[in-house]
Image (cartoon, rainbow, N blue to C red; front, side, top):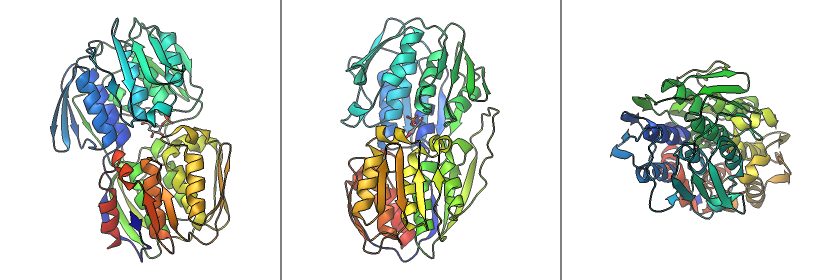
Length: 429
Ligand code: S3P
C-alpha cells in the first residue's frame, strides 16, 4: 500500500480502544465469579485471540458491538481445553494467561501461536511460575509452544530481571491463588494496568517504590471495565500531526495513564506540540484509568536522548522516536532498549534498516539506535515484516516524506488498529 506525501493533516479522530487494557479486562473477566461488562473492548486480531482463549477455558463471552460481557469460571476453575490455545500474534496473551493457568491444580494447558510468537521468549515467565509451584515447559526451554500444568502455588518474593509489564502481570495473576503475600520488584516502572484493575476488583495490592505486594484472593469482583483509547495507537496520529507541516489534529479519548505517556513527553521535549491533560507521575496505586483529548500540531523538532528508565514508559513507541529523529535538528539517541529486539519483530534492526531505505541517517546499537536528522525522509519501500507497529510507522513516514512510501504488508495493522488506514486517510483529505 502506498502513502503519498500529505500537504497537511487536520480534523478529529478517536483513538481505538486500548489493547493492553482489553486483554486484561478479558482475562480478569474470565477469572471473576460474577459477570463482567467491558465497555469499548478492542476488536482487533490480538484481543480477539484473548476472547477465544478464555472461551476455550470455559468462560462465556457475549459480544454486542463494543460491549463485551464475560461470564467467568472463577479463579481456580478454568477448564482444560482439548486443543492447544492459539494466541495468534499476541505476546501479552502469551505472557499473562499462564499466570492464571498456573493456579489450575492438576490441569494442563498448551499455548502456541504464529511464527512471530514462536520466536518470543517465555523463559521469563516460566522461571517465576516454576518457583511458585507450577510445571512449565517450553521448546528449547525458551520458546512456544509453552506447556503449563497447574499446581498448588506458593507465594514468592520475585525480582524481575527486565522491566516488563507482561512478566510482572503474569506473577501478579498467579499470586492471587498463592498461599500468602507475593511481592514483585521491578527494575524500572512499567505500565500498571494490571495493578489498577486488580485493585478495582477488590484485591489487596499495594506499591512501595518499585515493589508491589499482593495478597491471595478468594474471588475477583469487577462488575464493569471501561476501556480508554490506546495511547500506543494514538501515537501514530500524534507523530503524523507533528511531522506534517501545517497540521492540526484532535485525537479524542486517549488513555493518559502516566506509565503509558512516555512518548508524549518525548515529543514535547523534541518541541512537537501535544496539548492534553496527562496524568502526573504517582507512586500511589489508583484504580482509575485517566482519559484526555490530545491536541496536536506540527512543530520544528529538536533531537533528544532517551535513557533506560524512560524506555518501558514508551517501549512500543520507540520506532516513532526514530522516525521523528529523522526530521529533528541534531542527533536523537535511544539507549537501554535491548527489549526492542524481542518484540513482534526485532524492532531495532527493522526500524534501522527500514528507515535507512527511506533515506535516514540511522545506525543500530546493541541497545537502541542513533539517528541524525538530515532534513526528513526521501521515501521508498518499507517491509513491515508482519509487525503491526512497523507497518503503521511506514505509513506515517510516507505522509511526511518527500516522495511517498510503499508499505509491504500493511494488513498487519489489524493486530492492534484495524481502522488505521481509513483514520489516517480521513485526516489527510
Ligand atoms: C505490554 C507490555 C509491553 C509492550 C506490549 C504490551 C502489556 O511488553 O511492549 O506491547 O500489555 O503488558 P513487555 O512487558 O514485554 O515489555
